[in-house]
Image (cartoon, rainbow, N blue to C red):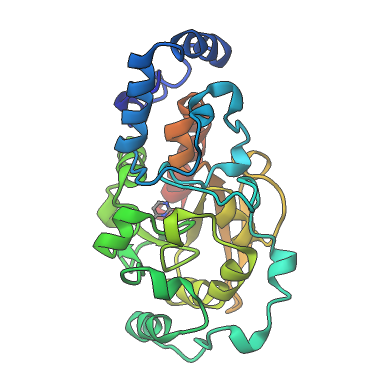
Length: 297
Ligand code: URA
């Protein structure tokens, strides 16, 4: 059974029991109303605030999507029936979005200007349903910039990225490599919360790319970390899944003469749902720590 203890990040915990054993165990338990109640409580703890199915099939591990390509789905995410959970922004399609709907932020010289331009940008319907923009958090002078997918309910309320349960796990992941959260800079591909935490569409991702691009140029970090498949696909302009991309350094052409190393890794929300995968993220974070040391040497 998934418990709040999954909100930890240490190399010794993730693989304590093989996934299959764990699933069999859960199968047996799922008939028990107490365990269903616990499963429901877990979902509430994770921020679920809306039912999207009439049945509890989604609480059954056999029906859950084990693909890491859905890794960016936040614990409180709900995917509309018309859109498969594993539908990720496709940059090739994204590039076909009309230029007239894109924000023009190339002239923004400061973060304040960029934030202002992003706030004023009316081309995205997400602005109409969100409470406020979730622009960024952390140290703008940081050498490392983390990029997530989109704000969730907690982020929408507080106006800062990664402040909910995913953010808490991220903070632990950072602590594990002695990198305080305050030392990093963090933003999302999408700056307004998609209603009901649904997966952002290809068009929405494309609309926010010019802002992200300028954001990266203004921060001028030495490296990027993409949290989850959606951010990795958007930044690296690829259709490859996160399990293929993670664990290796890629390159991002910032368009200003800088080529930045990029480490795609698993999204904390995915790790909360699939704690057995924490070992992979642990490895990625070791690569990140090593690269930071190289930069500092
Ligand atoms: N998930 C994200 O991708 N970004 C956030 O800010 C919070 C959860």
